[in-house]
Amino acid sequence: MRRPTARALAGVPALIAAAVVTPLAAPFPAAADSVVIGGYEVRAEESPWVVALASPDRFGPTRGGQFCGGVVVAPTTVMTAAHCLSTAVLGKDAASVRDLQIIAGRSELAGDGGQEVPVRKTWITPKYDPVTNSADMALLTLAEALPADHVLPVASEGDPAYEVGTAATVYGWGDTRGDGSYASSLRAARVSVLPDGTCASAYPGGRTSRYQRSTMLCAGDPQGGHDACQGDSGGPLIAGGRLIGLVSWGSGCGRPDGPGVYTRVSAVAPPLAGAAS
Ligand code: ARG
Image (cartoon, rainbow, N blue to C red; front, side):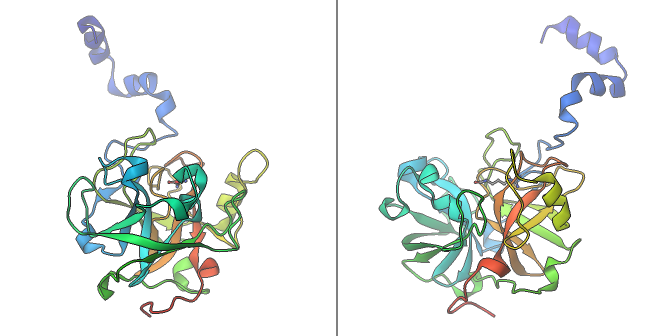
């Protein structure tokens, strides 16, 4: 920036300068310190149920090949979003991605901590509708069992954690600003369960996607600024120590008018053999 310009701006009272310089920024309060949007750093060692889904062949080795999130729901089972396994994401059928793996217990994707476990089998719920993203849930069977303390219990129908206003936390290595700034370390953001009506009016269908309360869950920050974003998909939304949702979709990231839409796991998950209770 040329010095005279900088000087001139410095003389403008801060409030006016902000209004002049960042009018478009107001609806997108996603700040520099976001994660997931508006988040904080967490240690994967302390949140061992969060895993990264990775394919270094397809996504490159820099961030361990991470492209989605997932959550350990039984020692050999990871739950994720069905759309993470689509050919649009993987470039081919999930079964033919030879190096599909999960990374557990590694905060820094570039590091070599934690455990890489190959995925032996993928299963997408037959309820999944790729057009509407309804029932966006898949299960991955791991080639080796993870320790039992990695397993997160899944909420069942009627769980009070689904009540509007419940505080919840979303985890992921996704975009922290909505501009392709992917996080290198695991982050979390605090959101709350929002009324179905909020997402139903934000996403009425037609030109936007349609929110379906039977298979989806609405969560976010009514003021904006705290949300999941691209790359967080499949990662967990947790309340009361239980898995209540999976990051699925939304309009932009961290926008007050674009709440996060999550998979309602209580409605979509099958009974999980060997899961913690
Ligand atoms: N579809 C995105 C993914 O594949 C997740 C987007 C979530 N967006 C949001 N605003 N909560 O990573």
